[in-house]
Image (cartoon, rainbow, N blue to C red; front, side, top):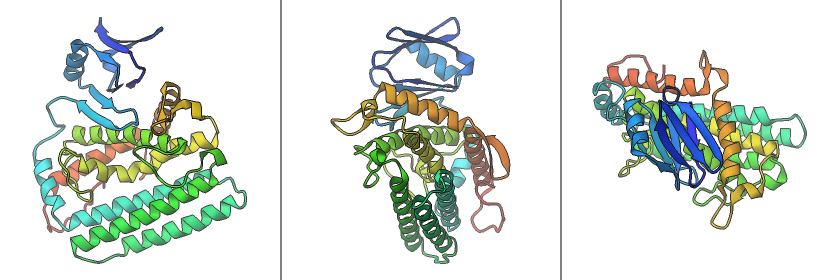
Length: 335
């Protein structure tokens, strides 16, 4: 399980094999062996015993900013597998095969966007017409992506970015059009969010970033050696690559909450942008956890969404461990 500790002034300690959380008048105790991750916000207090217990039991401590971004993490000094994976990861990043992988990642992302639009279609005009038109455009962009044969990595990267950006703009424009009016937005906004929907979406992306990075590290993959996203000092480029495949799952959570009209302006701290407050976080986090704990069929396997993410990282690690540039093997990353 995962613990989310976001209330200002919350204190966490260890006693008799239990993680104890005290937040105002609230008290919570959880056995150490049941916890996989602890998400901590500013203003929370951890004892040194909590840190040592987490390190010794493989529990990740993840520190979040108020918008959901991951500020950092504490984890064991061991990767999840042998160094061959990370050595071959460098070779793969410089190979032509890596561009085919990125195309596949973005194609799957577009498939996920289409699936989300279909899921929110109530069969009512004019929303259904709007959704169908957007899906048609997304399918056209995906077909253009997968049929591309250019060889230059520079040209290919620019082409893929163009397709991905175009698809995302059409997708989010459609989502805004079909949401209840009070949740509609002009465009994606990040730092800061300019509306309730983007405030929620930024936070769900923060949670998903943390989960993807954990899955990669546990599988033995270096989160900093990326393919598509530019290498930047101390930035997890590989996390940014892999997360694209799973973004539509994170999108669904705020979309559903907006469609149900259960989020309100009083759930946000607004003066410096829309940041979720304690009440808003409680609703969003629980909805995210419940959604990712659902068992679904995905790529011929029945698992929770969290389980599918873990399996994908493991398959990617297996591919990298065996990777040799141009050796003609037919396995693809994630197969």
